[in-house]
Image (cartoon, rainbow, N blue to C red; front, side):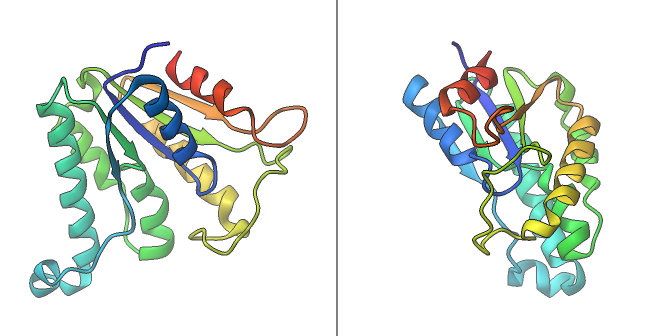
Length: 188
């Protein structure tokens, strides 16, 4: 089971991104793990454009991501969340469109990124019994379907060549699939 040098792991909250990353590290050793969290309203961006400060922060972070992906081909990097979440969360919670991330993909020729795999973890809502709403997810249980639909649309639109969706829901029990099985599917 080999792993690409670059893994971009996307998906809803509470689908096992951290567990998957731990599995990759335990199996293949060191990767630099970058966690893309919520944007910050920095004075740097607020001074020049207070209405668009969050978007400018995000855009700078995603440009840096693609500079790393393009400019450091041998570096081993895992992104816990990456740019696709912007298409999901920006229009719903930050009230601006997130599709500009595809302009960044085109600018950096994402279709030709070497040794880079985009992973989208998904949930089967018809069978899932594993999600527990602890109040810490951005949108909560009532937003999960809409968020996942937006992730699926963004995933389909992404030009990254090596990409796969992996459902974390066991089709029989509705619980989480075994972490080892998810890892094997991601790295196959």
